[in-house]
Amino acid sequence: MMDTVEAISMPAIVCHGGAGHSAKDQPGVDAAVEAGWEILQSGGTALDAALAAVVIMEDDPALNAGTGGRIRADGSVQLDAAVMTSNGQFGAISCIQQTKNPILVAAKLLDDNVNIISGRGAREFADNIGIAREKVEGSLKLTGNDTVGAVARDETGLMVVASSTGGCTGMPAGRIGDVPLIGAGLWCDERIGIAATGIGEQITLKMSSVRMADRIEEGYDIENVLNWGINQYPPDVEVGFIALTTEGEGLGLANTKMPWSSKV
Ligand code: ASP
Image 1 (cartoon, rainbow, N blue to C red):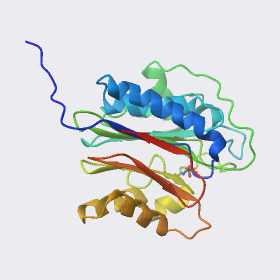
Image 2 (image 1 turned 90 degrees about the vertical axis):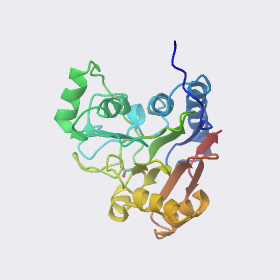
Image 3 (image 1 turned 90 degrees about the horizontal axis):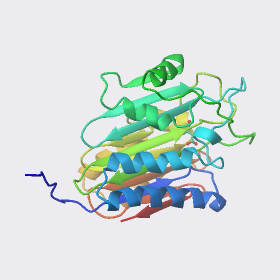
């Protein structure tokens, strides 16, 4: 007899294209939501949906991740990415080079006993799992930062957060922002999934994602959680978040422009 999975939850997805990005970059975010939604609608997992959405945004040269990753002070393109699941798995890579879709490398760490790999080791890990080395052009824009992110929930109730970034323009080689840091750039547990974007050093100092998640426990709703997160920063520190809880649709909020979109 075939096992059937009882649907206990309503699938949903929310994506963002980075704090500071304008409405002209909305199409890439919409395409990411559509791709993830299609997977969820056909009974696919939140992991597959979140990864598919982020891959689309990594491949969009207008967004700062993968192909459009910002160039470092030494001219290199070094990328960070992370994935976290509501059932307690986490994987991240930082400062990886020659890799168009770093999110797929980070995802391979979910089942590994290592949580985070950086630099040369990250690229060698990708070699070992069969992800080819490719030239990553990087964005020619001289300023800007931003990140892409997705949070998905599938019919089993599993939630997954996936984030990917080129970091902030002109940062030193080897700099690690908030994106691959658990609790800072992302958080996911059985109550809520959160992805951050903005000035990585500030987000890391405040450990925003996990502190926001704790407010759900205290009885606050998703809108309150996002507002509280944003209000921890002065207005000149660009920051934005997307979040999704066990019920309802996802939400995005930023203290600047931020293309985001959701479906439930
Ligand atoms: N948080 C990212 C970083 O600092 C960039 C961004 O999202 O704006 O690497």
